[in-house]
Length: 227
Image 1 (cartoon, rainbow, N blue to C red):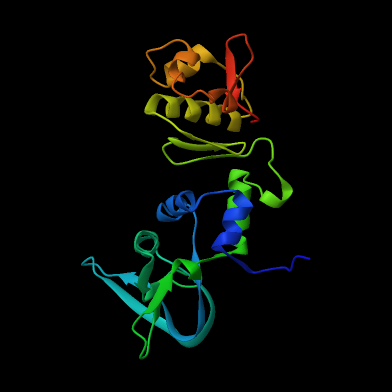
Image 2: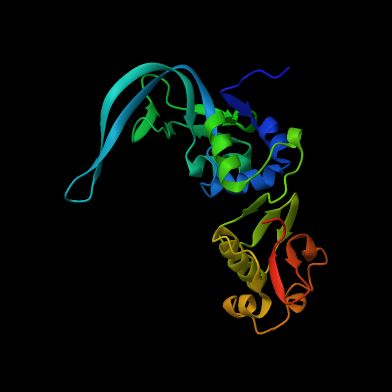
C-alpha cells in the first residue's frame, strides 16, 4: 500500500528515477531541480526585495511567523551540502515571497543530506519535462534528459558522457524531435554540429554503445532512439 505524500526523501527520489546521487546533485547545483528541508515550528521572516535607484537591495519584511512546512534551499547551500555533508542555513527560497529567513534567537539550522526532501510538485514537474519515469513502473520508451550543454545525456535508462561534437549532434537531433521531425539527414546533422567528419559512426566511434542513443534507418537518416 502506498500513501499519498506531499514530499519525498532523497533515497525515494533516487530509486524512482534510477539515478545516482552524483547526478541528482548536478541537477540541483545547476538549479534544474529544487531540494527542500522540513522546518518544524521555527520563527521565519517572509518579505520582498526592493532595489533602489543607487543599486542597493533592501529587504521589506511583511510577515514573521512560527512556520511549519517545507522551504527550498538556495543553490549555493546545496553545492556546499553535497561536498561537505552538512551546511549551516539561515536563508531559504520560497514561491510565496522574494525571501525567507530565520528570525528571532535562532541564527541558523544545520542541514545534512539525510534532511533533504523533494516536494511532490517538483518531482512531478521534472517527470513531465524530462519524461523520466518511476522505477516502480519500469522504463518508458523515449525517456530522455540532457544537461544544458548536452554533454551528459540519459536516454532510455542509459547514461552517456559526450564530447563536444557528439553533444552538438545530440542537441541537433533533440531539437528536430521536439519539432516533430525526428529523422534527419546524417550529413546535415554533422554539418550543423560543426563536425569535420561526414560519417556518424566516425563521430561516435569512442562510444561502443552509441546505438542505444542514436538510431539509423540504414539509408543515411538518424534520430534519437525512441524519440
